[in-house]
Length: 112
Length: 113
Image 1 (cartoon, one colour):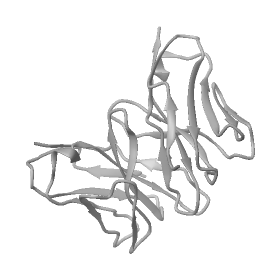
Image 2: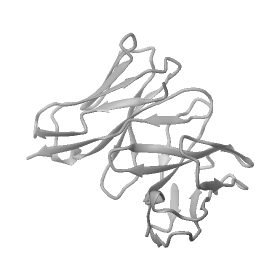
Image 3: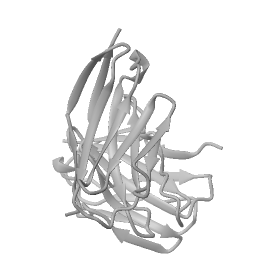
Image 4: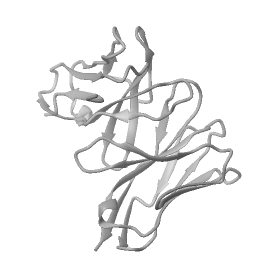
């Protein structure tokens, strides 16, 4: 019940295309859903996050769509660029410890 | 601010050896975390701390120990290293109290042979 399932494992998109990564969770107590971006040899960094009281959040080319009834959320990267090539992790958190449960990760390659 | 720093960057251990991975943050964050990252498995929480003197187990604590004597430092101890502990280890910190954003260090790549 604590799992967060992420798909696809890898994704190849042409420059200018839309990248979509999906996550699903079971625990309805989760109240925070971030996406982290990780470049090779670096630690993950927060990209964008959403709370379950909204269905969508947009920051520049990055959008989170959240479906509370389906217990799913997704990351959309519009106008994907080669510089977006990285590994993306979804996560879910709850409670007052700040603990996060991470998905398995998606390796995105944007071809020029 | 240096943020979250980790040492060493790389280490090779022999089976049965012990070592301590160091983690320091200069952001005065209360909460700190240790993760391991294995290919295709995401990040798994090993231990976490919500303040000096307070630690608790995460998802995969076996074979590890932690301590938190100061706000800044959160070392991770590996006792009797095993090949299954070959991984990349990340330390992270956050303000806590309604702030879930975690700031990650650059990681330590550990190989146990």
